[in-house]
Length: 410
Ligand code: SF4
Image (cartoon, rainbow, N blue to C red; front, side):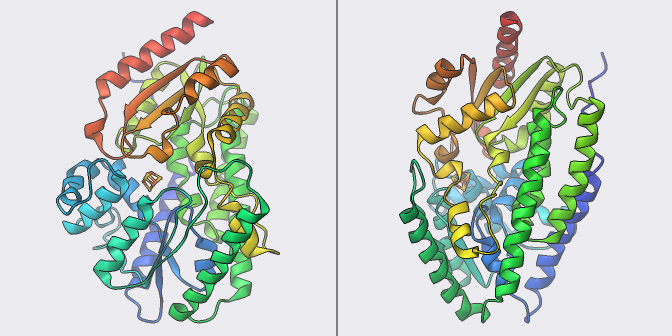
């Protein structure tokens, strides 16, 4: 029997170009004494950095590329050897391990010899503590400043006092950045916030094409096409890209074109991707005529609170109302509303061994949501980057059994 082929997204070609321009632009900036480079966490204050004229580089994205190219597992032990445990974030350990060995996947992809040397590293602990430890490692290595925002974690409703305290931190960060980059350009800052908001709105509409029946987009497509929303938000390039992608996907919806031919079941993915196994997982769901139509992960780069007329406060709110920052009650309401919007038949939880922050199956949530929504669930044990924590055979068998269960329920 011939293998079922995934439906290609034509805009992917343009995305490759946009991402190549991004990496080559940062590489050029890092070699130009007149320009400055800032490293930023994936949900860090990118718009503020752009307001200061920094080229912004995102190590989590770099480590995801290590994972997707199945190199991460090779380099993790080199970070373990300098004291970073195999149990902590495998984005951190893969990235530091690769750096220690002088390796970057950017060489093969773009001819870039090394990750860019930063003038400053800026984190927000809104996602985890690991990003702070990760950035501090590089700050010590290069002898450059590492600045941060400490966000409240595990909160329910985001109150005005939460936002006020983060706003004050973002404002203080701006004064610290002035020492490194000179004065903030308020117009560029507002423009960046406006472009980021526009990017976010377009990205949300892209993901919403997964709500169509049949879905026009899968979670696996989303993990690839989210690149510009992560590393280019705040730029016109990201806006232009998502306008192109959205037009293609809305045409699919209008024409009733399915991302997964013969779609029989629809699933929600909670947790991180298994970067090194995206292709086989996507292929298995395709062959089972089951579409993973939505995820928490891809939706984490929607920041519709951003407001160019109130850039500091709206950034503080946008980066504090994130799913990952919130308590289980808020998370459950969010997932319940997503399951309803995308009309799913079940939920897959990825328990990522080295990321407790993005694994929401450990405190009874699957059972509570299953009861509340009358939806079956499956937990897959694995990891975002460390493939030693993932048994492909076991995951394959569990997914097959889960889909059989869905078949029987119909
Ligand atoms: S949220 Fe998880 S994967 Fe992301 S940096 Fe933190 S520990 Fe690593």
